[in-house]
Length: 289
Image (cartoon, rainbow, N blue to C red; front, side):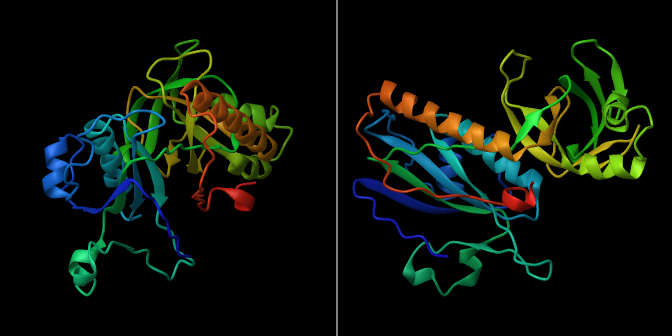
């Protein structure tokens, strides 16, 4: 598909992220190394002047993608960052991300493709909001990650926050809940666990109403490590989630209502969304449920 946009009063800056990106880059580093120019130097004002980054990442290195996100958030704390990771139609296809900085350079393949990420910086008379429906609801207690391996994609140990009890890999109670003390065959338990995901808290401390980013679990065994598709680090709070289509619909309705209230409180009442972009992946939609 092709998306076209007409954005009067908005400055648009295309950029490509080099492989040596760092999460400690300053605004000057992003300006010189990723060609962001003077993006983000003028203060934002809700409802009249805002800034956003539309980011499309290459799937080859999830850790580097996380570095890009951390670096942009560090250098531009008031900027909304939205986007997704490039996917493929089939396993035989290779994902590509590319950016044409100008028509003159459109024939230079080396300067147009990236193995890290490409994006658009938007700044000016624009308002951008991100709404994420996780499609899952939490089950069980919160855990603190205490030991990881494989670059953070494998949780080796975690500690239950309520009791302080340590757990080697997946807590046994998760399997006991599913197995009902052995009354259900373990093959059925393993199939049921295919609907379990891991929620990583957005907050560094445990709170009553916590928000999570739900990540798929690639493998889970009794007393074994928890294998994730995206890395976590020691000290982060995690909680098991179960995929739930009804909860996803209710969450989306709630988020949309909250978005309306926030826009009204910011003095943006009367502004009508001019467009929307939806980012879907293989862990959303019918494949998820």
